Amino acid sequence: MARIHPTAVIEDGARIGADVDIGPYAVISPRVTVGDGCVIGSHTVIEGVTTLGKENRIGHFAAIGGQPQDMKYQNEPTRLDIGDRNTIREFVTIHTGTTQDGGLTSIGNDNWIMAYVHIAHDCHIGNHTIFSSNAQIAGHVHVEDWAILGGMSGVHQFVRIGQHAFLGGASALAQDIPPFVIAAGDKAEPHGINQEGLKRRGFDADDIGALRQAYKLLYKSGLTFEQAKGELAKLAQEQGKAGKHVQTFLDFIAASQRGIIR
Image 1 (cartoon, one colour):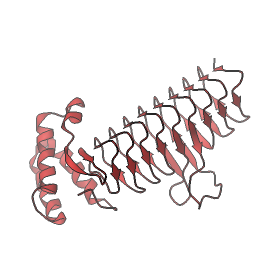
Image 2: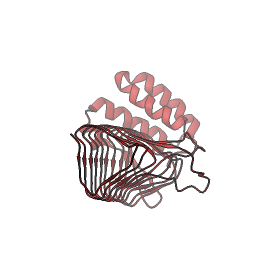
Image 3: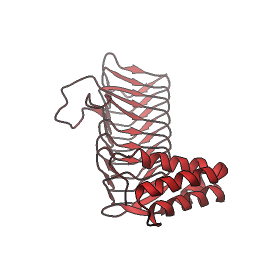
């Protein structure tokens, strides 16, 4: 049975799963689907074409599924899809996509999104990420699995943040962070491999050693970008099982459109 406070507004057409808890003065709009076991805090608004999976916890006063802050938006029925077991805290704002991109903003599973975070239109967030309080990402940003954004950090539109990357607090990011890399600063710059984070997630000494070599080739060797890519390809072949992580590093930087942090 759903537990819905009598002051909450559930508009006709909204689909509410089993064992959902909806707090006082929350508003659920007609095109919203709320999966089983979700908890929706008081005064939260969920609108637009928005789907929440199972067991998400939404804090008080969050605004989920609002229209994009994009002057080209013309009320098209673009979407927001949120997976399972995400924690989304107080005053978070997450917007639907635009037709200039794929029409979709997406958030995966098991993410921890702290208070006052903003996730703009057409962003794609993977799984197991952490967004510290007041982290702000502009439109079309991609954040891969296990990435962490520090508090009060800001991310330029179209930037990509690789898996297991770490962006320090109060940093301004205008270019891509390769996977496994720590970045920080008013203009975010690389500060080595995220060794402690990788250890916590089960990367062994060989994996981390190979990634440290990859980082040095890219950032410390004096090679040109094209030369570094060639050396990284060789390293990926030489490193046995750890080579798959070097290949992930290489594939990411080779695909960069905005360029990587330097």
